[in-house]
Length: 211
Length: 254
Image (cartoon, one colour):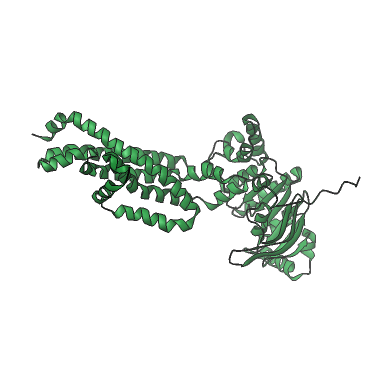
Protein backbone atom coordinates (compact mmCIF):
# COMPACT_ATOMS: atom_id res chain seq x y z
CA UNK A 1 0.00 0.00 0.00
CA UNK A 2 1.39 3.40 -0.80
CA UNK A 3 1.27 6.48 1.44
CA UNK A 4 -1.69 8.08 -0.32
CA UNK A 5 -3.91 5.05 0.16
CA UNK A 6 -2.96 4.89 3.82
CA UNK A 7 -3.72 8.58 4.27
CA UNK A 8 -7.07 8.29 2.50
CA UNK A 9 -8.12 5.07 4.21
CA UNK A 10 -7.29 6.55 7.60
CA UNK A 11 -8.69 9.97 6.78
CA UNK A 12 -11.38 9.90 9.39
CA UNK A 13 -9.03 8.57 12.05
CA UNK A 14 -6.42 11.22 11.19
CA UNK A 15 -9.04 13.94 11.67
CA UNK A 16 -10.11 12.56 15.04
CA UNK A 17 -6.50 12.24 16.18
CA UNK A 18 -5.72 15.76 14.94
CA UNK A 19 -8.61 16.96 17.07
CA UNK A 20 -7.15 15.17 20.10
CA UNK A 21 -3.74 16.57 19.32
CA UNK A 22 -5.11 20.10 19.13
CA UNK A 23 -6.91 19.59 22.44
CA UNK A 24 -3.66 18.51 24.13
CA UNK A 25 -1.70 21.42 22.66
CA UNK A 26 -4.47 24.02 23.14
CA UNK A 27 -5.20 23.11 26.76
CA UNK A 28 -1.55 22.91 27.73
CA UNK A 29 -0.76 26.24 26.05
CA UNK A 30 -3.69 27.90 27.85
CA UNK A 31 -2.32 26.68 31.18
CA UNK A 32 1.25 27.64 30.30
CA UNK A 33 0.16 31.16 29.29
CA UNK A 34 -1.94 31.61 32.42
CA UNK A 35 1.09 30.75 34.56
CA UNK A 36 3.97 31.86 32.36
CA UNK A 37 2.95 35.45 31.55
CA UNK A 38 2.28 36.49 35.18
CA UNK A 39 5.49 34.70 36.18
CA UNK A 40 7.44 36.58 33.51
CA UNK A 41 5.97 39.91 34.70
CA UNK A 42 6.96 39.02 38.26
CA UNK A 43 10.53 38.24 37.19
CA UNK A 44 10.81 41.56 35.38
CA UNK A 45 9.88 43.32 38.63
CA UNK A 46 11.74 41.18 41.15
CA UNK A 47 15.23 40.24 39.99
CA UNK A 48 15.85 37.97 42.97
CA UNK A 49 13.22 35.50 41.74
CA UNK A 50 14.97 35.11 38.39
CA UNK A 51 17.56 32.42 39.20
CA UNK A 52 15.18 30.02 41.01
CA UNK A 53 12.29 30.39 38.55
CA UNK A 54 14.31 30.29 35.33
CA UNK A 55 16.49 27.51 36.79
CA UNK A 56 13.46 25.38 37.60
CA UNK A 57 11.84 26.01 34.21
CA UNK A 58 15.10 25.12 32.45
CA UNK A 59 15.51 21.99 34.55
CA UNK A 60 12.04 20.85 33.50
CA UNK A 61 13.10 21.11 29.84
CA UNK A 62 15.86 18.58 30.47
CA UNK A 63 13.54 15.86 31.81
CA UNK A 64 12.92 13.33 29.03
CA UNK A 65 9.28 13.59 28.04
CA UNK A 66 8.53 9.92 28.55
CA UNK A 67 9.89 10.14 32.09
CA UNK A 68 7.85 13.29 32.83
CA UNK A 69 4.68 11.59 31.59
CA UNK A 70 5.59 8.71 33.90
CA UNK A 71 6.15 10.89 36.97
CA UNK A 72 2.70 12.40 36.57
CA UNK A 73 1.12 8.94 36.86
CA UNK A 74 1.43 9.23 40.63
CA UNK A 75 0.09 12.78 41.08
CA UNK A 76 -3.45 12.88 42.55
CA UNK A 77 -6.28 14.18 40.27
CA UNK A 78 -3.87 14.35 37.34
CA UNK A 79 -3.40 10.57 37.36
CA UNK A 80 -7.14 9.97 36.92
CA UNK A 81 -7.11 10.72 33.20
CA UNK A 82 -4.39 10.25 30.61
CA UNK A 83 -5.05 13.57 28.88
CA UNK A 84 -4.58 15.40 32.19
CA UNK A 85 -1.14 13.89 32.49
CA UNK A 86 -0.20 14.78 28.94
CA UNK A 87 -1.57 18.32 29.24
CA UNK A 88 0.29 18.91 32.50
CA UNK A 89 3.56 17.66 31.05
CA UNK A 90 3.18 19.73 27.88
CA UNK A 91 2.31 22.85 29.89
CA UNK A 92 5.48 22.36 31.95
CA UNK A 93 7.57 22.19 28.78
CA UNK A 94 5.90 25.28 27.35
CA UNK A 95 6.63 27.37 30.45
CA UNK A 96 10.29 28.23 29.84
CA UNK A 97 10.02 30.04 26.49
CA UNK A 98 6.92 31.92 27.67
CA UNK A 99 8.38 33.01 31.02
CA UNK A 100 11.74 33.87 29.52
CA UNK A 101 10.37 35.95 26.66
CA UNK A 102 7.80 37.75 28.81
CA UNK A 103 10.41 38.65 31.39
CA UNK A 104 13.10 39.77 28.97
CA UNK A 105 10.64 41.75 26.83
CA UNK A 106 9.26 43.66 29.80
CA UNK A 107 12.67 44.17 31.36
CA UNK A 108 13.80 45.46 27.96
CA UNK A 109 11.24 48.29 27.69
CA UNK A 110 13.12 51.60 27.24
CA UNK A 111 13.75 53.02 30.75
CA UNK A 112 13.01 56.54 29.45
CA UNK A 113 9.54 55.40 28.39
CA UNK A 114 8.88 53.80 31.77
CA UNK A 115 10.14 56.88 33.60
CA UNK A 116 7.99 59.17 31.47
CA UNK A 117 5.00 56.95 32.22
CA UNK A 118 5.62 57.19 35.97
CA UNK A 119 6.22 60.92 35.76
CA UNK A 120 2.91 61.43 33.92
CA UNK A 121 1.19 59.93 36.97
CA UNK A 122 0.37 56.50 35.60
CA UNK A 123 -0.20 53.81 38.20
CA UNK A 124 1.83 50.57 38.09
CA UNK A 125 -1.15 48.77 36.64
CA UNK A 126 -1.68 51.39 33.94
CA UNK A 127 2.00 51.24 33.03
CA UNK A 128 1.81 47.45 32.77
CA UNK A 129 -1.36 47.37 30.67
CA UNK A 130 -0.90 50.42 28.48
CA UNK A 131 2.86 50.53 28.07
CA UNK A 132 4.86 47.47 29.10
CA UNK A 133 2.63 44.67 27.82
CA UNK A 134 1.83 46.27 24.44
CA UNK A 135 5.52 46.99 23.86
CA UNK A 136 6.51 43.49 24.98
CA UNK A 137 3.82 41.73 22.96
CA UNK A 138 5.81 40.82 19.81
CA UNK A 139 8.51 39.17 21.89
CA UNK A 140 5.94 37.39 24.08
CA UNK A 141 4.23 36.06 20.94
CA UNK A 142 7.67 34.86 19.81
CA UNK A 143 7.87 32.81 23.00
CA UNK A 144 4.35 31.46 22.49
CA UNK A 145 5.35 30.40 18.98
CA UNK A 146 8.40 28.48 20.18
CA UNK A 147 6.35 26.88 22.97
CA UNK A 148 3.54 25.87 20.59
CA UNK A 149 5.85 24.24 18.08
CA UNK A 150 7.59 22.46 20.96
CA UNK A 151 4.35 21.07 22.41
CA UNK A 152 3.00 19.98 19.02
CA UNK A 153 6.12 17.84 18.69
CA UNK A 154 6.24 16.48 22.21
CA UNK A 155 2.51 15.70 22.14
CA UNK A 156 3.26 12.90 19.65
CA UNK A 157 4.56 10.92 22.67
CA UNK A 158 1.21 11.23 24.46
CA UNK A 159 -0.10 7.83 23.19
CA UNK A 160 2.60 6.20 25.35
CA UNK A 161 0.37 6.96 28.34
CA UNK A 162 -2.85 6.51 26.39
CA UNK A 163 -3.58 10.21 25.90
CA UNK A 164 -4.16 9.96 22.13
CA UNK A 165 -3.22 12.42 19.44
CA UNK A 166 -1.42 11.94 16.13
CA UNK A 167 1.34 9.95 17.84
CA UNK A 168 -1.22 7.10 17.94
CA UNK A 169 -0.51 6.36 14.26
CA UNK A 170 3.24 6.69 14.76
CA UNK A 171 3.22 4.19 17.63
CA UNK A 172 0.97 1.84 15.65
CA UNK A 173 3.24 2.14 12.61
CA UNK A 174 6.28 1.33 14.73
CA UNK A 175 4.54 -1.72 16.20
CA UNK A 176 3.49 -2.94 12.74
CA UNK A 177 6.79 -1.92 11.11
CA UNK A 178 4.74 0.13 8.63
CA UNK A 179 6.51 3.29 7.51
CA UNK A 180 3.45 4.63 5.73
CA UNK A 181 1.44 4.44 8.94
CA UNK A 182 4.22 6.26 10.79
CA UNK A 183 4.13 8.96 8.12
CA UNK A 184 0.34 9.15 8.33
CA UNK A 185 0.85 10.38 11.90
CA UNK A 186 4.10 12.25 11.42
CA UNK A 187 3.11 14.33 8.39
CA UNK A 188 -0.06 15.85 9.90
CA UNK A 189 1.87 16.51 13.12
CA UNK A 190 4.61 18.25 11.17
CA UNK A 191 2.01 20.25 9.25
CA UNK A 192 0.40 21.31 12.53
CA UNK A 193 3.75 22.52 13.82
CA UNK A 194 4.44 24.39 10.58
CA UNK A 195 0.98 25.96 10.62
CA UNK A 196 1.42 27.14 14.21
CA UNK A 197 4.84 28.51 13.36
CA UNK A 198 3.51 30.28 10.28
CA UNK A 199 0.44 31.80 11.94
CA UNK A 200 2.14 32.95 15.12
CA UNK A 201 5.18 34.10 13.16
CA UNK A 202 2.90 36.20 10.95
CA UNK A 203 1.22 37.69 14.01
CA UNK A 204 4.62 38.47 15.52
CA UNK A 205 5.79 40.22 12.35
CA UNK A 206 2.60 42.24 12.09
CA UNK A 207 2.91 43.40 15.69
CA UNK A 208 6.55 44.34 15.18
CA UNK A 209 5.69 46.39 12.14
CA UNK A 210 3.03 48.25 14.09
CA UNK A 211 5.65 49.38 16.61
CA UNK B 1 -9.42 87.15 61.37
CA UNK B 2 -5.82 86.96 60.42
CA UNK B 3 -4.81 88.51 57.11
CA UNK B 4 -4.56 86.06 54.21
CA UNK B 5 -1.06 84.63 54.22
CA UNK B 6 0.84 84.88 50.92
CA UNK B 7 0.65 81.71 48.84
CA UNK B 8 3.52 79.30 49.51
CA UNK B 9 6.28 79.10 46.91
CA UNK B 10 5.54 76.58 44.16
CA UNK B 11 8.42 74.36 45.25
CA UNK B 12 10.58 74.42 48.36
CA UNK B 13 13.61 72.30 49.13
CA UNK B 14 14.25 72.26 52.88
CA UNK B 15 17.60 70.64 53.59
CA UNK B 16 16.71 67.95 51.08
CA UNK B 17 19.30 65.29 50.39
CA UNK B 18 19.45 62.00 48.58
CA UNK B 19 21.75 59.03 49.04
CA UNK B 20 22.00 55.84 47.06
CA UNK B 21 21.06 52.66 48.96
CA UNK B 22 24.77 52.10 49.67
CA UNK B 23 24.99 55.53 51.31
CA UNK B 24 26.73 57.56 48.60
CA UNK B 25 25.39 61.12 48.66
CA UNK B 26 24.03 62.32 45.30
CA UNK B 27 22.55 65.54 46.64
CA UNK B 28 23.28 67.20 49.99
CA UNK B 29 21.24 69.62 52.08
CA UNK B 30 19.55 71.46 49.26
CA UNK B 31 17.59 74.47 50.50
CA UNK B 32 15.96 76.50 47.77
CA UNK B 33 12.59 78.06 46.95
CA UNK B 34 11.20 78.18 43.46
CA UNK B 35 8.82 81.11 43.11
CA UNK B 36 5.49 80.90 41.38
CA UNK B 37 5.83 81.56 37.67
CA UNK B 38 9.62 81.77 37.51
CA UNK B 39 11.98 79.64 35.43
CA UNK B 40 14.67 78.33 37.72
CA UNK B 41 17.54 76.77 35.81
CA UNK B 42 19.70 74.25 37.64
CA UNK B 43 23.09 74.51 35.98
CA UNK B 44 25.92 72.11 36.62
CA UNK B 45 28.16 69.35 35.31
CA UNK B 46 26.86 65.90 34.47
CA UNK B 47 26.45 63.92 37.68
CA UNK B 48 26.35 67.02 39.90
CA UNK B 49 22.92 66.12 41.27
CA UNK B 50 20.65 68.33 39.13
CA UNK B 51 18.46 65.52 37.83
CA UNK B 52 18.18 64.09 41.34
CA UNK B 53 16.87 67.44 42.58
CA UNK B 54 14.31 67.42 39.76
CA UNK B 55 13.10 63.90 40.52
CA UNK B 56 12.63 64.80 44.18
CA UNK B 57 10.00 67.32 43.09
CA UNK B 58 7.65 64.84 41.43
CA UNK B 59 8.63 62.09 43.84
CA UNK B 60 10.20 59.81 41.28
CA UNK B 61 12.60 59.49 44.19
CA UNK B 62 12.08 60.33 47.86
CA UNK B 63 14.49 62.46 49.93
CA UNK B 64 16.80 60.56 52.28
CA UNK B 65 16.89 63.62 54.51
CA UNK B 66 15.08 66.94 54.72
CA UNK B 67 11.90 67.67 52.84
CA UNK B 68 10.62 68.87 49.50
CA UNK B 69 7.36 70.78 49.45
CA UNK B 70 5.14 71.37 46.46
CA UNK B 71 2.51 74.07 46.90
CA UNK B 72 3.31 74.10 50.60
CA UNK B 73 2.83 70.37 51.16
CA UNK B 74 5.57 67.76 51.61
CA UNK B 75 5.85 65.51 48.57
CA UNK B 76 5.53 62.56 50.95
CA UNK B 77 2.13 63.87 52.08
CA UNK B 78 0.92 64.06 48.47
CA UNK B 79 -0.59 61.09 46.72
CA UNK B 80 2.24 60.53 44.21
CA UNK B 81 -0.16 60.04 41.32
CA UNK B 82 -2.05 63.27 42.05
CA UNK B 83 1.26 65.10 42.55
CA UNK B 84 2.69 63.93 39.21
CA UNK B 85 -0.45 64.85 37.30
CA UNK B 86 0.01 68.45 38.49
CA UNK B 87 3.60 68.49 37.27
CA UNK B 88 4.60 68.27 33.61
CA UNK B 89 7.86 66.44 32.91
CA UNK B 90 10.07 66.62 29.83
CA UNK B 91 13.29 64.62 29.51
CA UNK B 92 16.12 64.51 27.01
CA UNK B 93 15.22 61.03 25.75
CA UNK B 94 11.63 62.35 25.42
CA UNK B 95 10.16 59.00 26.47
CA UNK B 96 7.25 59.19 24.03
CA UNK B 97 5.36 55.90 23.90
CA UNK B 98 6.54 54.36 20.64
CA UNK B 99 3.26 52.46 20.12
CA UNK B 100 1.05 55.53 20.60
CA UNK B 101 0.38 58.10 17.88
CA UNK B 102 1.40 61.70 18.50
CA UNK B 103 -2.21 62.54 19.42
CA UNK B 104 -2.47 59.67 21.90
CA UNK B 105 0.86 60.57 23.47
CA UNK B 106 -0.24 64.17 23.97
CA UNK B 107 -3.65 63.03 25.25
CA UNK B 108 -2.11 60.74 27.85
CA UNK B 109 -2.74 62.70 31.04
CA UNK B 110 -6.15 64.13 30.00
CA UNK B 111 -7.11 60.56 29.15
CA UNK B 112 -5.93 59.29 32.56
CA UNK B 113 -7.86 62.14 34.13
CA UNK B 114 -10.98 60.96 32.34
CA UNK B 115 -11.69 63.99 30.18
CA UNK B 116 -14.50 63.54 27.62
CA UNK B 117 -13.23 62.53 24.17
CA UNK B 118 -14.31 65.71 22.38
CA UNK B 119 -12.53 67.91 24.92
CA UNK B 120 -9.36 65.79 24.60
CA UNK B 121 -9.40 66.11 20.81
CA UNK B 122 -9.75 69.88 20.99
CA UNK B 123 -6.97 70.11 23.56
CA UNK B 124 -4.60 67.96 21.49
CA UNK B 125 -5.09 70.17 18.43
CA UNK B 126 -4.58 73.29 20.53
CA UNK B 127 -1.38 71.92 22.08
CA UNK B 128 0.12 70.73 18.81
CA UNK B 129 -0.43 74.18 17.32
CA UNK B 130 1.06 75.72 20.45
CA UNK B 131 4.31 73.79 19.95
CA UNK B 132 4.36 74.52 16.23
CA UNK B 133 3.11 71.23 14.78
CA UNK B 134 0.21 71.11 12.32
CA UNK B 135 -2.35 68.72 13.88
CA UNK B 136 -3.58 67.62 10.44
CA UNK B 137 -0.11 66.45 9.47
CA UNK B 138 1.23 65.13 12.74
CA UNK B 139 -1.61 63.89 14.98
CA UNK B 140 -1.74 60.38 13.52
CA UNK B 141 1.99 59.80 13.12
CA UNK B 142 4.05 57.51 15.31
CA UNK B 143 7.01 58.99 17.23
CA UNK B 144 9.55 57.16 15.05
CA UNK B 145 8.18 59.01 12.01
CA UNK B 146 9.28 62.35 13.51
CA UNK B 147 12.60 64.17 13.65
CA UNK B 148 14.32 64.70 17.00
CA UNK B 149 13.12 68.28 17.24
CA UNK B 150 9.54 67.30 16.40
CA UNK B 151 9.62 64.56 19.01
CA UNK B 152 10.80 67.02 21.61
CA UNK B 153 7.94 69.38 20.65
CA UNK B 154 5.51 66.53 21.20
CA UNK B 155 7.19 65.88 24.55
CA UNK B 156 6.55 69.49 25.57
CA UNK B 157 2.93 69.28 24.36
CA UNK B 158 2.40 66.10 26.37
CA UNK B 159 3.81 67.71 29.50
CA UNK B 160 1.49 70.71 29.10
CA UNK B 161 -1.59 68.66 28.25
CA UNK B 162 -3.52 68.86 31.51
CA UNK B 163 -2.33 72.44 32.10
CA UNK B 164 -0.12 71.63 35.11
CA UNK B 165 1.06 74.65 37.13
CA UNK B 166 4.59 73.23 37.35
CA UNK B 167 6.89 72.02 34.57
CA UNK B 168 10.10 70.04 35.10
CA UNK B 169 12.53 69.85 32.20
CA UNK B 170 15.65 67.69 32.22
CA UNK B 171 18.00 68.76 29.41
CA UNK B 172 15.05 68.62 27.03
CA UNK B 173 16.95 70.13 24.10
CA UNK B 174 20.31 68.53 24.85
CA UNK B 175 20.23 65.92 22.09
CA UNK B 176 19.22 68.32 19.29
CA UNK B 177 21.43 70.01 16.71
CA UNK B 178 22.46 73.56 17.56
CA UNK B 179 20.04 75.24 15.16
CA UNK B 180 16.97 73.27 16.26
CA UNK B 181 17.99 73.70 19.89
CA UNK B 182 18.16 77.50 19.62
CA UNK B 183 14.84 77.54 17.78
CA UNK B 184 13.15 75.45 20.47
CA UNK B 185 14.71 77.53 23.26
CA UNK B 186 13.33 80.69 21.71
CA UNK B 187 9.88 79.21 21.20
CA UNK B 188 9.85 77.73 24.66
CA UNK B 189 10.72 81.08 26.17
CA UNK B 190 7.86 82.75 24.30
CA UNK B 191 5.50 79.98 25.34
CA UNK B 192 6.59 80.25 28.95
CA UNK B 193 6.06 84.02 28.97
CA UNK B 194 2.54 83.44 27.75
CA UNK B 195 1.66 80.54 30.07
CA UNK B 196 3.49 81.68 33.22
CA UNK B 197 4.21 78.17 34.51
CA UNK B 198 6.64 77.55 37.29
CA UNK B 199 9.52 75.83 35.52
CA UNK B 200 12.55 74.00 36.87
CA UNK B 201 14.95 73.42 34.02
CA UNK B 202 18.10 71.31 34.22
CA UNK B 203 21.01 71.95 31.87
CA UNK B 204 24.80 71.91 31.67
CA UNK B 205 24.78 74.58 28.96
CA UNK B 206 25.40 78.15 30.17
CA UNK B 207 24.02 79.71 26.98
CA UNK B 208 20.77 77.84 27.46
CA UNK B 209 20.62 78.88 31.11
CA UNK B 210 21.16 82.55 30.13
CA UNK B 211 18.43 82.38 27.51
CA UNK B 212 15.75 80.83 29.68
CA UNK B 213 16.41 81.53 33.34
CA UNK B 214 14.73 83.91 35.70
CA UNK B 215 17.32 82.64 38.18
CA UNK B 216 20.18 80.19 37.89
CA UNK B 217 20.92 77.68 40.64
CA UNK B 218 24.48 76.48 40.26
CA UNK B 219 24.96 72.88 41.35
CA UNK B 220 28.42 71.41 41.90
CA UNK B 221 29.45 68.19 43.56
CA UNK B 222 26.02 67.39 45.07
CA UNK B 223 25.62 70.87 46.57
CA UNK B 224 23.94 74.10 45.57
CA UNK B 225 26.86 76.49 45.06
CA UNK B 226 24.75 79.62 44.70
CA UNK B 227 21.67 81.21 43.14
CA UNK B 228 22.10 84.09 40.69
CA UNK B 229 20.08 86.11 38.24
CA UNK B 230 21.53 85.76 34.72
CA UNK B 231 23.12 89.21 35.07
CA UNK B 232 24.57 88.47 38.49
CA UNK B 233 25.92 85.22 37.14
CA UNK B 234 27.82 86.95 34.34
CA UNK B 235 29.34 89.50 36.69
CA UNK B 236 29.90 87.25 39.68
CA UNK B 237 33.37 87.19 41.19
CA UNK B 238 32.72 83.76 42.77
CA UNK B 239 35.21 81.32 41.27
CA UNK B 240 32.69 78.78 40.01
CA UNK B 241 30.38 81.05 37.97
CA UNK B 242 33.46 82.92 36.78
CA UNK B 243 34.90 79.62 35.53
CA UNK B 244 31.69 78.87 33.64
CA UNK B 245 31.70 82.30 32.05
CA UNK B 246 35.39 82.03 31.14
CA UNK B 247 34.90 78.61 29.58
CA UNK B 248 31.91 79.93 27.66
CA UNK B 249 33.78 83.00 26.38
CA UNK B 250 36.75 80.83 25.43
CA UNK B 251 34.48 78.65 23.37
CA UNK B 252 32.96 81.64 21.59
CA UNK B 253 36.35 83.02 20.63
CA UNK B 254 37.54 79.76 19.14
